[in-house]
Image (cartoon, rainbow, N blue to C red; front, top):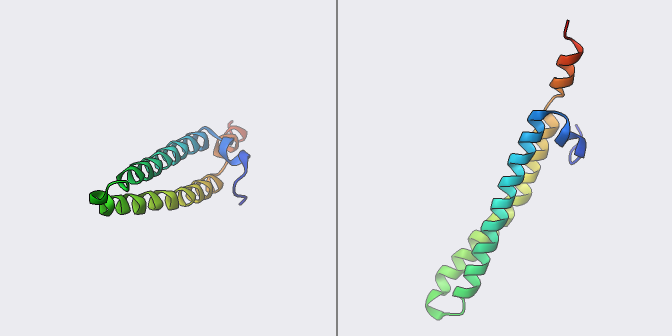
Length: 93
């Protein structure tokens, strides 16, 4: 089982759909992390909003921690997918 290889992403229609779904999730998580940090940074300019800003930084950090976790799960799932499309074509009678 080889991880992080391009071949795993393109070996079947199912693997391509799985890779695309994980890429969308990765992009959404990155966007949420950036928004949390941006809003938190602006809120830190006002003393009344420091508490909320801190929680936004914690949330943004959590989203940044999810990104490598999501990538590892994606690669494990792709690596575990068998090449059933080609296998089925070889054994058709």
